[in-house]
Image 1 (tube, rainbow, N blue to C red):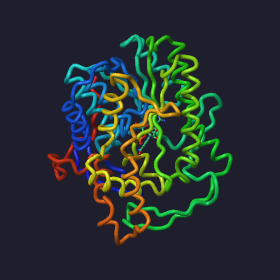
Image 2: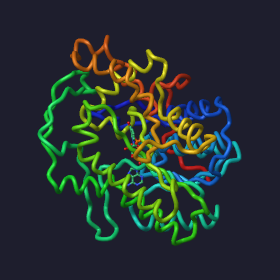
Image 3: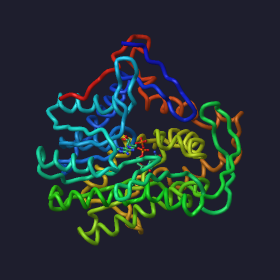
Length: 394
Ligand code: NAD
């Protein structure tokens, strides 16, 4: 038992609060349960990258909104009696406890999703418990990947692919707006980022599952992407990560040629505070401005609202998924509205450290960031000692 306080190092928090993470999961469940129940949801869902951010929401919505059985795969650190584990570990423990309390099937796998052994383990569990799954949600965000075919480890970078890029950025630790210059990636860095964050591993999962016969007739699979406004394009859409997302889209097209139209889709989601997005230069400043604008307009959403809409308007909508001209789902539609983007740009052009408090929602950014690690949740006593050893329920 120990008192757990946040310890922030740059853009990560090295501690997490078990009770706070459970409260954060409960908040998301409460939101889903307050919505009109979904009809026509998939009933057996595998979520790869299910412990935090978009993946966690993607596990909560089909389970608590549609009664689905879920399997989750993630790479997290289990807490011990002396040291807290990672937030994704506690989120997953809380998710399983709450799902089981509702009579919902839930099973989780902690380890490297890129490894062949993990795919084999999950496939064996599907055969054993569910027979087949009807939806596979791919929501990994990782800085590295070891390719099982050659044992080599590739690292992703967040860099532009054209000229050196100079833009405002926010040091979220110090609360300072400054200029950042990022040199263009090398061809090798681009290729390595595509290896890590492109569609190759998504394809390997689907291939392995198809060969094993664990994909139900008419199954669906979705992976997530981001586009955003022109001010971030150099480091995102036109950068190394954008190349990887392009590969993700090509992978979806190739899967659809094999399995039929709309089997595999890419959903373009809104920019939100997650462990992955806080590491991208420029993006936290954009998010701080975006949150202020969207909260004022009354159309701000978090991961859970986004994924609820992915299901209610697309997968469970009367006409199925609605696609843009490139065949993608766009739940970033409210973020990309012209009035929202014009208001963001106006602030962007004059932003400075002095105007951070008045012109952005940096306070909201910081509290969302802390919430990712289970801090700042109402009803949690942060001065009390808590048990940090929390196994997944049997
Ligand atoms: P996140 O950091 O919150 O979640 C990443 C998940 O991947 C976690 O569950 C983690 O445990 C898991 N993971 C990482 N490496 C793993 C490994 N080797 N094996 C098993 N699991 C592993 O990230 P997120 O922001 O929710 O991102 C998920 C997806 O959504 C990404 O494709 C990202 O590009 C996309 N997306 C994010 C945003 C955003 O603003 N955050 C916007 C649009 C799209």
